[in-house]
Length: 203
Image 1 (cartoon, rainbow, N blue to C red):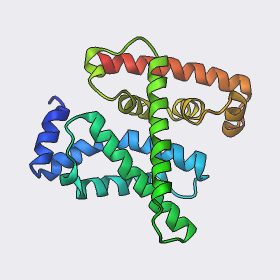
Image 2: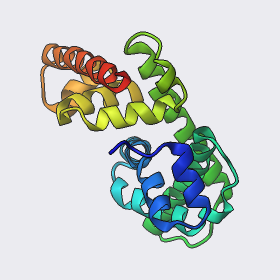
Image 3: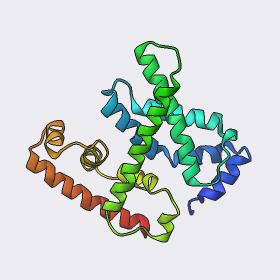
């Protein structure tokens, strides 16, 4: 059975179809998890769990879905990114024991999330030729997050550390408890695997 299109799911979701809302938003779960994980690991030293933040984001998105007025995947990802920044800010306040909402912090978080999303798009561009017309209609950072989620754990990890967190090969080697040479080889194999997965996604 073919997967429902974004437009079809969005139309059903707008009509109050709760299963359609869930199906639509779950398509963005790998992307949300990747953005949350980068923030938690690089900025907050894993003080809380990225998966919990993503679940809070999805639950809140379903709750306030009638407020979404966009019609494109780009508009939906921007909207979800804002909800994710709110969820991250909430966890930060809870971790620091503060109840007051800091809008400046949420704006900063959203900016960092946007930068991570842009880095995903840049990695997509580095990974091969221009996307097919089918993929070009989608947000490439969302597509890449889906593809990364299908890679072996060590491949995904080295690509995230190198391209999203911006670590050197030496720093990654320390993080992964490997030699710098083995880390570079792992990164090369991971890029090859990523390109292969992207070709399958375009088929």
